[in-house]
Image (cartoon, rainbow, N blue to C red; front, side, top):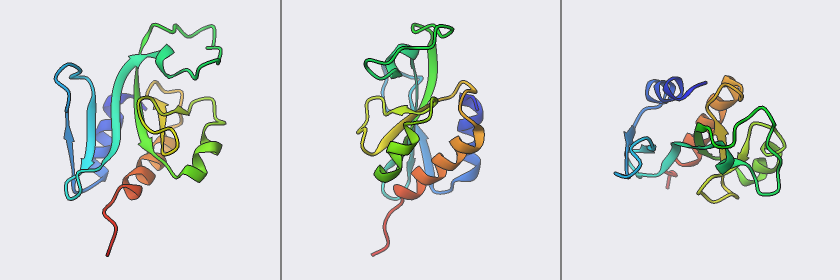
Length: 131
């Protein structure tokens, strides 16, 4: 999935959300959050590929580390994150708590069904809890 498809998927499939652009200096960064509790469940950014490569990892030679890349940060269950990070297309969260968030590239390398399932999980994990 690319950025545009991902944003459309979120807007069309999740109710009670808002999309906003919280930082004036990075207008290409967008946040999807719940209306009722204002919690984020998805953050889409444009960063250099080298930014998301874990320290000490070797980037694939065919990938330009300085090339801009759209990514999405999603909340995940801490017990699931260790398993997710074994996949080549899922990275430790960029600029978020790495115990609770993961980063996925929006360049077609990550399967669309996996992105959709993780968006759904992030949405559910950040929904207001019933009292």
